[in-house]
Length: 200
Image (cartoon, rainbow, N blue to C red; front, side, top):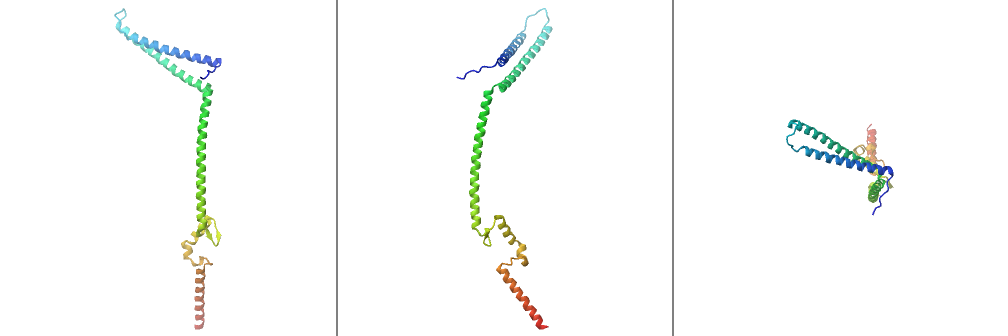
């Protein structure tokens, strides 16, 4: 069983004031509503005419209805004051709510950390497999030297471009096929020059 906390004198007085306001407003609502019901009763003939009596009863109902509305607004203000009092003075409940929220956030953080670590491990495995595949293929080899991925693909694209294939002057001079074609072209030019000199 939870022990009741001892409130300071100022807080105790404030709570007693709240209790008094609550009782007064409820009593006011009850009394005015009872008088309105009594006014609705039709009485026998008196010295006052019926029209005058009806007008008096109508005015009294309006006044008592206004009192009921005022008491209701006072109760709503009392509820607001009680909420403010609890928020500002109920420190154990506030601390408990803060601790619960911190625990929830820590649990969420741990779950996010686990997911991030798992994702990191999966990415590391995939990268390792991709590197193994790259370095084991011919795409990653260039003149017996392992090149970075970006450099290898850049050279492959440059040699496979239409400009390099259409322009013989930009061909690789170390390519054996290109060397053979250049030697045959040179021999053809030399034979043509020698035949021209004999005719002259």
